[in-house]
Amino acid sequence: MKPQRIGSIMASKIFASEARKITLNFLYPPGRSLHVSKLQFLALLNVIILKIMKHRITIIEDNDKIREGLVAVVECSGRYDVIGNYSNCEDAIRLLQTDLPDVVLMDIGLPGMSGIEGTTRIKKQLPACVILIITVVEDSEKVFQSLCAGAGGYIVKNSNVEDIVKSIDEALAGGAPMSLQIARMVVQSFNRRNDSPLSNRETEVLQAIAQGKSYTKIATELFVTKDTVRSHIKNIYQKLSVNSKAEALQVANNKKWIDKQWLPY
Image (cartoon, rainbow, N blue to C red; front, side, top):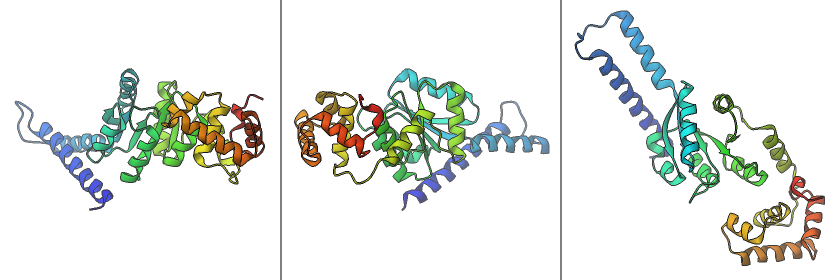
C-alpha cells in the first residue's frame, strides 16, 4: 500500500478516535443524564471541529531546554497541537506514520542523522508535510542544502515567540518564512554559475576553507577523514590550475563558484 494511502487511513482513524473520545466525555460525564439539547449538540460539534482541525506539529531538537521552549510556544498559540517532540530524527521518522504531522520544526545539527537528511526522508514519506528548519547557524551551504532537501522555510532560534508562530502560520498558508539574511544567502546560492568543474563535495570543502575552517573541522562536519579533505584540496588545485588556497579562492570567487561573503578580502 502506498505511504499516502496509509497516511490517509491513519488520519481517518485518528479523526474518528478523537471525535469518539470527545463525544463520550461530553455525553457521559459523572452525574449527568444522556439527554443533550440542540444547543449542547452544536457546542459539542464546535469542540470536535476545533480539536480535530488544529494542525499537528512535530518538533525535532536535541537540546532539551530549547525543545521544551518550542513545545510551550507552539501549544500556547492555541492553534496547534504538538503531537510529538524528539531529540533525534531516527525516533521521529520511526513514528512518522503514527504522528502524521502537518508541520515539522527541524534542527539541523542533530546527533546521528542530520536535519537535512531527516528532511529528505520525511518529505519522501509525507510530501505534504511542511518542514521548517530551526537553527542558530546562518550557514549558507546548509541553508541551501536544507531547502533543496525540501524544507519550506528557515527560522533562527533566537527569533521571538511571535515570529516563530507567525512563521508556522506563513508556511501553512503557502509561504516560505526566512530572515532577510537567510533570504540573501539563498539568492546568492542560486546565483552561482553552474559551470564549475568542481564536484559538490569539492565545492563544500573550498567553501569551508573560505570560512577559515581547519582540516579537522572540515573533516568533522563532512564526516570524512583529514586525508580525504587533503585529497579533495589536491583535486581542487589540479582542476583550477592553482598552487595555493588563496589562488583557489580567488578563481572560485571570480567564477562565482563559492559565496563571496566568506572571503577575507
